[in-house]
Amino acid sequence: MKTNKIEYAVIGGGLTGLTIGYYLNKANKNVHIFEKKNRVGGVIETIIENGFVYEAGPNTGVIGSPELVSLFDDLKPLIEIEIPKSGAKNRWIWKKGKWNNLPTGLISALATPLFSWYDKIRILGEPFRKVGKNKDESIAQMVRRRMGKSYLDYAVNPFISGIYAGNPEMLITRFAMPKLYNLEQNYGSFIKGAIKKAKEPKSDLEKRVSREVFSIKGGLSQLILALSHEIGYENIKMNCKNIAIEKKEAYFILNYTDLEGKSIVFEVKNVIITVSGSNLPSIIPFVSEQKLKNITNARYARVIQVVLGYTHWKGLKLNAFGGLIPSHENRNVLGILFPSAIFPNRAPETGALLSVFMGGINNPDLILKSDEEIKVLIISEIEETLKSENIPDFIKIFRYFNAIPQYEISSAERFTAIDEIQNEYKGLWIAGNLRDGIGMADRVKQAKQLADSLTKNIKKD
Ligand SMILES: Cc1cc2nc3c(=O)[nH]c(=O)nc-3n(C[C@H](O)[C@H](O)[C@H](O)COP(=O)(O)OP(=O)(O)OC[C@H]3O[C@@H](n4cnc5c(N)ncnc54)[C@H](O)[C@@H]3O)c2cc1C
View 1 (spheres, rainbow, N blue to C red):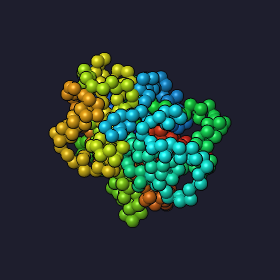
View 2: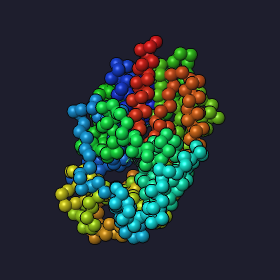
View 3: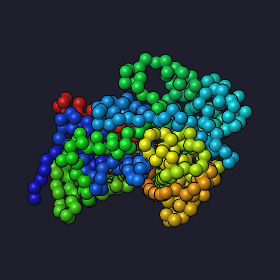
View 4: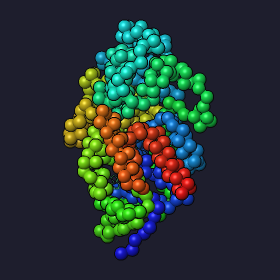
């Protein structure tokens, strides 16, 4: 049997794996991506049909890390960044049967019915409140302590639903929102910290990091296509079934079954795994079950994304980014994005495209409902919340059983287990959204930093 020799094997061809592959390849390293499906991109997938351009997975990211800014620069002119239209900046929050704009400044924060008067006055004292001492404080505990319950219920809770599909009572601030945690720890207050941080000197790249939302012209799959093109399709192996790694003295043996059922073998110096936790035991069987337990027990939110396309939209004017629904409003929907309002050319001129998110950590069994049951639920939610008067031309349902890992209290043990495995097996790396953040900006940051550190290490040797 022929054995191929390579320097780096990246397991999983999602955004993390492809970005690692891209930067290793750019540094002239011999790298191959091994993906089990017949396409790369992982949860990122843009579908173009009948005048609509829609996403099956993430719709937008935030330009939230210098590494993402660098990647966009590096991939020019293969990709063109899109930012929201000026009329689509507002976020709506549902309260007692009505949408309200999420405040963006002091005046709107005082005027909004979302927060109680008690909390509006109390927020003035936020800069003077004591710094928390419990390092394992949940996001909910921290926000209640510093800002008040109504901020938790009508700003942070829906925001956490939108990002983590999670529960702020369970997410630990220092793991799930480290920037927020550090604002309090380093500056004593969110408000003081935000003001001081804005004044700190920044590199040119850091100056371009923002809270601005992005997509890519033509949809997020264009980013995947650009990365794949640059890596070279000859270096991307798809349809790799039953990938299993064996540890040898100074290298690894990677084995998989191809589409024709043939066993393919690679001798590899370094292996970088970017798949979700439950896939690890079969890929690295030489690591003990006991060691892997603290990684495989990561809890994931289940998410259903329902995309609705209307050739003609008759309903509320969709002049916003989308709407989020706080959990105690007890609806079947976490949030609705309005992609056709945010970006050009996502739906016909008179039409609309909606992306509705359902399920999440608080409603895990919704994903088990049939398509017909979900459609009935969705139609009634859209009629009630967006006053739609007509039925959509199409409804597409995408289910994710392992959508978003939750950075709960067990995360500390997970991060330690990953470090221990990496230390014990030199040349083995466990990346992906099990650590270092779940957003696309975090994924690119981790991937670029890992690739940079690996290529620097090699140069040193
Ligand atoms: C519905 C949804 C909405 C989201 N919305 C946003 C958003 O609005 N903004 C944002 O910034 N982020 C969002 N995210 C998060 C973000 O999209 C992900 O964190 C990121 O894309 C994950 O990339 P990844 O490469 O780490 O993982 P994945 O995309 O999961 O890729 C992992 C890859 O590994 C492959 N694989 C798995 N097992 C094996 C195996 N045994 N052998 C070989 N290959 C294997 C998979 O097929 C897949 O291609 C969203 C995620 C989901 C699911």
